[in-house]
Length: 290
View 1 (spheres, rainbow, N blue to C red):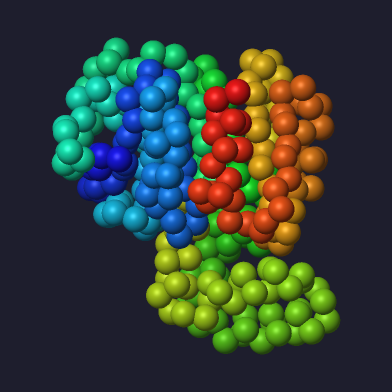
View 2: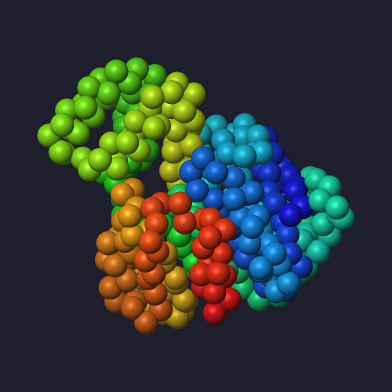
């Protein structure tokens, strides 16, 4: 895949683009991952699709310098400008920097298929709010965003919650004690306990968690509105879940499907949370191309 940079305000957004097909697949990675997570799809899809994946703030090769908020509307403009220039990518994967601007008429024809994994699923769902007319299909792997965790809401959507979140990431000792007690009395499931420890044991990891969660807080899909849009526009949605995933469970998708069963298909795979893997290539490709 070729690599490029898009200048957004004071930030340099890194992206990868590959394939040469007339249909466009826009890919959104999970927490702590990058655009390169989708590279294994190019061989199977590149003949019919152009694949575009970006690195979110504080991920991959993106150099983010615009505070702790990524405006979803800026993402839409950026995607439109990058896809407008897609036909002009340089050979041999040489990086290129895009300035805001360009001719949207150069976009590949047709609508966009969105592929989102975990956190990227929430971004894909929110884009359906903003540009429903451009979305042809959603393929979501263990997607975040189909429920609003009350702790996440408190930590990111309120000023006092963000201040407390920042304090806790700098001084996590009380949280360690609370988690030990919660695990002992089975107030949280073991998967959540292990997942939380993974992201608070290390100072750098805690700092990244605060920056990433806070910056991406503007992506908040409204599920009732989404179901209405999917039903009205008859947009196909394919949900993949890991049967043994203890972080994002399939029951979230089952609840979301109510009322849109015709458009929304759910598939369980015999694995955990890591669904964006070459071993699942055939099923992912089938969902995109069907």
